[in-house]
Length: 255
Length: 352
Image (cartoon, rainbow over all chains, first blue to last red; front, top):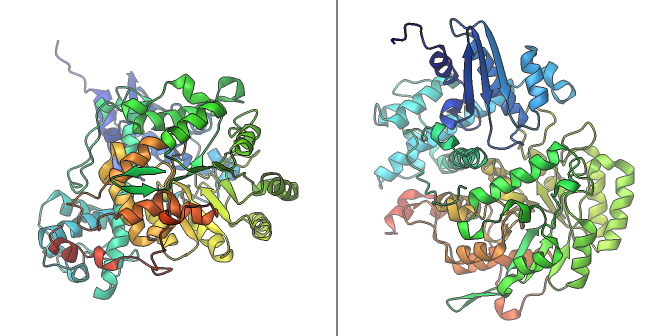
């Protein structure tokens, strides 16, 4: 028999691919956070899972509410149920999602204004990490370059079309930073380029951000697979734009 | 003491616990979720030979603790860092009476730190004075993500917390171990934010703030704060076992810490019973920064000795045999260390 109807479940999964874990800067589908997608006519039920019961509930809310919005936008979807499983705030978050409530209504006295600042913080960190990856790749490739020299490196100096460069450009767009060839790669949080004497410290700070993001991403993937045996099959390897941190994972640590 | 290749290491485990996560002590589902989360950490990061069954993981008791922590005479001294978690467990998570009895039975081997929570208000201040007298406190463990009635987190720069720090200063409780769990309120901002450590450390320069698991998952924020505050230290609880599953990540953590805060402000911790100290000490002594990570200088034996025990012994006035002591590095009090090693070109050109 030939399927003539569009595969709504596949469409939903594809839409969920646009939902990003802001802390790890990766789609929730790649991380294995989508536990199940069930389609019944126009009704879609999505279950999400996280590496621990105590993952920060604000990130959990961002991912779950983004997922609801993303799935609702898929043509053919009439009704969406998104549920977060096995979290210490599952009841609270799932009630809020079911009622279509916003962040402040859901978390009441624990919320002040919005999660915009939180999201902005991690959009900035994602760029900082991408910036460091691009510059460290240059430094490793050219031993005559010093860290102070990185202050003068422009986007045109980066190898065009590589995953590292492409990822950096994407994150610059997200922040509204210029993407022309003359734009300096190394910038502060406010977008301004440093003097050469300030460059090494800025680069080192960026490095600690990148190490943190990459380390957390690998740890969270591992914990998810420990918590939900088999979840590793749902995970996509960390993207090619981050080749600088090969992490060996020994065999036999997962039950 | 641990001996390897003729080198002797005086070992202080700066973070152990005697907990009870058994079902009969669980107050609600969160008690189960909490110990299950610990168990997942344990089995995700432990070598197969060091992985325990779930039942034995729930509770160890004093006798087993003494065997596990002090096996083969490697660890010289260990420090209890209990978590209260009264909302999750009927009798709390850290077992105060049992740990204190054990400490009294082995005063040369154990130090007992207790906890306080600024949300206990005035009564808690009185309790802190009583606890300081009962336990002879030199340090406390603060867990900012602990739940307390309607509140699911607090900050070190809350006005009431400052009252507690003032009492700590007055009573000579100088070692403030901070566990930055995911603090809930307000949810608007990053739950792992360590900015409150910055404020408290600035305002209480006579206290030492040991940030457990070196701020992970916010290593970058921790390093930036700690490099500016000479009284902020890194505890390696939870970071240590990465030495097995993710040695390159561990190398980067250590490399970053040595760069930003230096060798005199890093403390070894097993976080027992999350992990046991023996294999961690053995691995750390054998550990070296991979050669291709040219941005970091190789670890020296002296640095390892300091991290494994000498730094904690200094903070807690623990006796160390004269021949095992080392001088402090005489590094800058603030700002990055070993800046010359930060330059890839220099390090890469040295032929490492």
